[in-house]
Image (cartoon, rainbow, N blue to C red; front, side):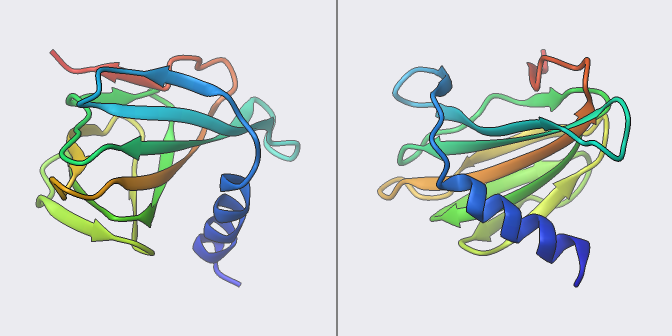
Length: 139
């Protein structure tokens, strides 16, 4: 079984776990909820963190980077997400589609592609256990 399939299946299962909200911004931004966090036992010093990002209609995240060590797998649970990472093309990902971000990537566009329907994605981070700030705004 491919690693992407394993990660996607695990991530979807984790979506249904109970968790509190990590952060909530203005009504025009996203709400991020941590779903899972654990040390990776066979990779010393690495952790896996899964977060669910809910976008209200028309909502967007500010341009940002993630923890410098983070490899991120993003999976659209519902709706459509418009995204641009580094110098890649701006793309709309729909329910069931996914993408990845390498360490040090700049996520310049991350928003709900719809002005009328909500959207939700699951982001899975594999990162150094001592990296605590998952997201940092780009100035």
